Image (cartoon, rainbow, N blue to C red; front, side, top):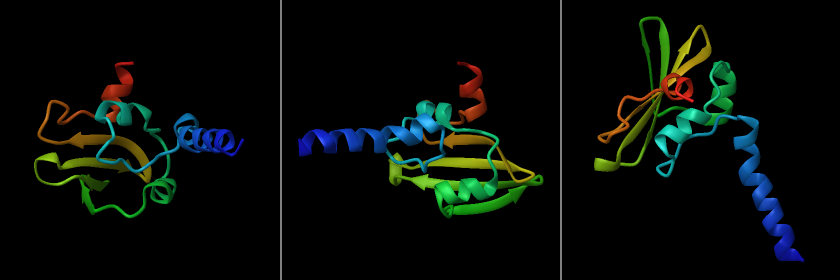
Length: 112
Protein backbone atom coordinates (compact mmCIF):
# COMPACT_ATOMS: atom_id res chain seq x y z
CA UNK A 1 0.00 0.00 0.00
CA UNK A 2 2.83 2.44 0.84
CA UNK A 3 4.56 1.85 -2.48
CA UNK A 4 1.30 2.35 -4.38
CA UNK A 5 0.67 5.64 -2.56
CA UNK A 6 4.25 6.76 -3.16
CA UNK A 7 3.96 6.05 -6.89
CA UNK A 8 0.73 8.05 -7.11
CA UNK A 9 2.20 11.00 -5.21
CA UNK A 10 5.35 11.03 -7.35
CA UNK A 11 3.27 10.89 -10.53
CA UNK A 12 1.16 13.83 -9.41
CA UNK A 13 4.22 15.82 -8.34
CA UNK A 14 6.13 15.20 -11.57
CA UNK A 15 3.23 15.69 -13.98
CA UNK A 16 1.33 18.59 -12.43
CA UNK A 17 3.71 21.44 -13.41
CA UNK A 18 3.88 20.27 -17.01
CA UNK A 19 0.10 19.95 -17.24
CA UNK A 20 -0.50 23.30 -15.60
CA UNK A 21 1.85 25.07 -18.03
CA UNK A 22 4.08 26.35 -15.24
CA UNK A 23 7.52 27.54 -16.18
CA UNK A 24 10.35 25.37 -14.89
CA UNK A 25 14.11 25.84 -15.08
CA UNK A 26 15.65 23.77 -17.88
CA UNK A 27 18.12 21.02 -17.03
CA UNK A 28 20.83 19.23 -18.98
CA UNK A 29 18.22 16.52 -19.60
CA UNK A 30 15.66 18.92 -21.12
CA UNK A 31 14.84 18.17 -24.75
CA UNK A 32 15.31 21.55 -26.48
CA UNK A 33 12.26 21.36 -28.73
CA UNK A 34 10.12 19.69 -26.06
CA UNK A 35 11.07 22.26 -23.45
CA UNK A 36 10.45 25.22 -25.77
CA UNK A 37 7.11 23.75 -26.87
CA UNK A 38 5.96 23.68 -23.25
CA UNK A 39 7.08 27.20 -22.30
CA UNK A 40 4.12 29.45 -21.57
CA UNK A 41 4.85 32.79 -23.21
CA UNK A 42 3.15 35.93 -21.92
CA UNK A 43 3.91 35.53 -18.21
CA UNK A 44 5.39 38.37 -16.18
CA UNK A 45 9.05 38.69 -15.21
CA UNK A 46 8.00 38.33 -11.57
CA UNK A 47 6.28 34.99 -12.24
CA UNK A 48 9.27 33.85 -14.29
CA UNK A 49 11.69 34.77 -11.49
CA UNK A 50 9.56 32.86 -8.99
CA UNK A 51 9.61 29.78 -11.24
CA UNK A 52 13.14 29.90 -12.67
CA UNK A 53 15.20 31.55 -9.95
CA UNK A 54 18.02 34.00 -10.54
CA UNK A 55 19.50 33.77 -14.06
CA UNK A 56 23.16 32.98 -14.68
CA UNK A 57 23.46 36.10 -16.85
CA UNK A 58 21.28 39.19 -17.31
CA UNK A 59 21.52 41.94 -19.92
CA UNK A 60 19.48 44.46 -21.86
CA UNK A 61 19.49 44.68 -25.62
CA UNK A 62 17.33 46.92 -27.82
CA UNK A 63 14.97 47.64 -24.92
CA UNK A 64 14.52 43.94 -24.12
CA UNK A 65 15.54 42.22 -20.88
CA UNK A 66 17.46 39.01 -21.53
CA UNK A 67 17.88 36.32 -18.89
CA UNK A 68 20.28 33.48 -19.66
CA UNK A 69 20.21 30.11 -17.90
CA UNK A 70 23.22 27.89 -18.57
CA UNK A 71 23.15 24.12 -18.20
CA UNK A 72 26.00 21.70 -18.82
CA UNK A 73 29.62 22.53 -19.53
CA UNK A 74 32.21 22.14 -22.25
CA UNK A 75 30.81 20.61 -25.43
CA UNK A 76 27.54 19.91 -23.58
CA UNK A 77 26.98 23.57 -22.68
CA UNK A 78 23.45 24.78 -23.43
CA UNK A 79 21.97 28.25 -23.02
CA UNK A 80 18.30 29.15 -22.74
CA UNK A 81 17.77 32.90 -23.22
CA UNK A 82 14.44 34.28 -21.99
CA UNK A 83 13.43 37.48 -23.79
CA UNK A 84 11.18 39.94 -21.93
CA UNK A 85 9.49 42.88 -23.62
CA UNK A 86 7.84 45.40 -21.30
CA UNK A 87 8.08 42.90 -18.42
CA UNK A 88 6.33 40.07 -20.31
CA UNK A 89 7.99 36.85 -21.54
CA UNK A 90 8.03 37.23 -25.33
CA UNK A 91 10.25 34.32 -26.39
CA UNK A 92 12.91 31.81 -25.31
CA UNK A 93 15.93 31.07 -27.52
CA UNK A 94 18.04 27.92 -27.27
CA UNK A 95 21.76 27.79 -28.10
CA UNK A 96 24.24 24.91 -28.18
CA UNK A 97 26.67 23.34 -30.65
CA UNK A 98 24.12 20.90 -32.07
CA UNK A 99 21.32 20.75 -34.61
CA UNK A 100 18.82 22.63 -32.40
CA UNK A 101 21.03 25.71 -32.08
CA UNK A 102 19.01 28.88 -32.53
CA UNK A 103 15.49 27.47 -32.24
CA UNK A 104 12.96 29.54 -30.31
CA UNK A 105 9.79 28.88 -28.36
CA UNK A 106 7.75 30.97 -30.83
CA UNK A 107 9.14 28.94 -33.74
CA UNK A 108 8.45 25.57 -32.11
CA UNK A 109 4.98 26.54 -30.89
CA UNK A 110 4.01 27.91 -34.33
CA UNK A 111 5.04 24.65 -36.00
CA UNK A 112 2.59 22.59 -33.88
